[in-house]
Every structure is written in C-alpha cells, then in structure tokens.
Image (cartoon, rainbow, N blue to C red):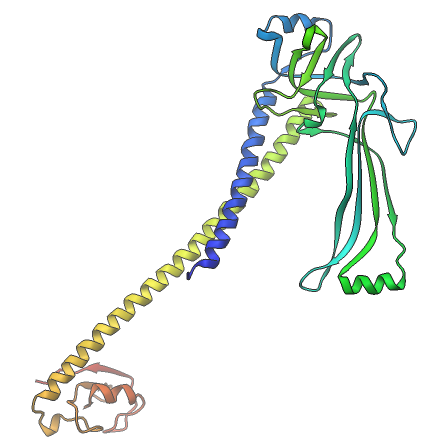
Length: 340
C-alpha cells in the first residue's frame, strides 16, 4: 500500500496511453488504405469497370462529384435560399460554472441536437452514384449556414441565485450546418451495384475500412489524417514517458525502503552482538581499572578520539557525545576498543 498513489497514476496513464496508441494505429492504417485507394472518374465507363469485379463490388474507391438530392432537398431554416441534403441543428447553453476550488470557468451544455437527411447522389455530367448511410461517415464535412448566439438578460435575482448555485447563464447558441446541394465532395468507400441493378451506390465498406465524405481532395485528406496521426503519436510518447517516470519513482522508493530495512537489520545484529558481548563481560570478573568511569559497573569498551582515552562502556558512550569525562577534550569520533 506504500505505492497506492503511483499505482493509480500508472493505471490512469496506461489507459490514456492505450487510447492514444489505438487512435494512432487507426489513423496509420487509415492513411495506408487511403494511399492505396482506387481513384475513379465519374463517367459512363464506371459501370463497365464494376462488372469486371466479383459480385460487382469494389471494396475501396475514391470518387469526386457534385452533391444532388434525389427528390426534394432540405431547406435551411435560417436562409431559405440555401438547400442541401444533410442538415445538422444544435442548441447549446453557455454558462459560467464554479468548480470545487471556487474558480469560475466557461462551460457548454448541449440542449438539443438532431440531423435531417434526404437521399442524394454524387453527379458528374450524366453519371451519378448514390451515397448510402452518409451519417455513418468517419469524416462528414458540413458547411456552417448559421451560428447565432442569443445572450441572456439576467435580473438581480438571477445574479443572486447564480452566485448561490454556482451556475450563471450567459446565453444560448444555435448552430445550423448543411451539406449543400452543388458542393463538390470526395467520397471514399465501397462501390457496389444497387439491388435489381438500380444504379451505383457508395456505401460504408464492409471490411471495416474508414468511410469519408469530405470537401477536401484526396491529397489534402491524406495530409489531414497524417497530422492527426502525428498528434496521437506525440501523445502516446508523452504518456509512455510519464509511465517510465512513475515506474522510476516506484523503483526509487522500493530501493530506499529496501536499503532502510537492510540498515535496520544490520543495526539490530550489531546491537544484539553488543548486548551479548556486554553480558559476557558483566558475568566475568572485571578489574577496577577496566570499569567505566561514569557508571562504575560495566566494562570499558569504547575509545574516544582524538584524546585516546578508553574510559566508557557502550551504554554510557551513547549518552556522552560532547567531551571526554577524563580530560574534557572534545569528542570527534568513537570506536570499539578490545582490551585483553
């Protein structure tokens, strides 16, 4: 239980290291797959190419086209002239909260968040590919249509209650994001023929590869993933370094404790040997010239330096540390004297 704090810190650090390393490996594998992806043009030859593959399915491709809704698009609630195929609305409350230390800090709370979507295709000239399960994409780039913040108008009573409760309301932020019609995006996923041969579909890969719908070209997407990979690798190195430091601290404490125990054992052995030697001396007849000058009972056994007087027993030498009782010279050190 001496290392309970270090063990807890090492456990937390190990969890963080595992998360960062897992994300790093995920990004590294994603980059490898994107770099080796088959880049196809949206043209009339796409269906012919697909028919040459088993099950008429390409496991991982990248295509770029213009977004077009199948049917009626979604109209923005903040700008009626904007239409799209995916709409994301979020409402967040901004507050200033007081923590346990008494400091105030900004905090956001999600009040409501929901998405609307309609079927859409990526189109180029007369060729189109329907995008399936777009909301499952690992990267889904949406354009911000509106981002409004409505500040609150607290009364005096609200200020008093906010100070008592530790929460002061600042306002509400309403954000609308959309995948606009006409936007050019890059889709990276699995390309397959639809059921009953009803066109081509781009869908999340069945082999677990990442699914991307981004406005970035393929080269920029790879750079973005590589930047994220570098961040996760750096965090993994930091967590690994912290773990080594914690292990070093635990090892240092263990070594100090071990050294202390060995020293105590040595001292106990020396004490027991001194006591045994003292008892043997006490049991034997002791001449008067060899009796301790302080207690006049025990055998002299300690030499005082630098004066050189052998005048104290071991018990009295532990109490007298300043001056020699014979010549009053200052005691610098002591040693065991063996008198035959």
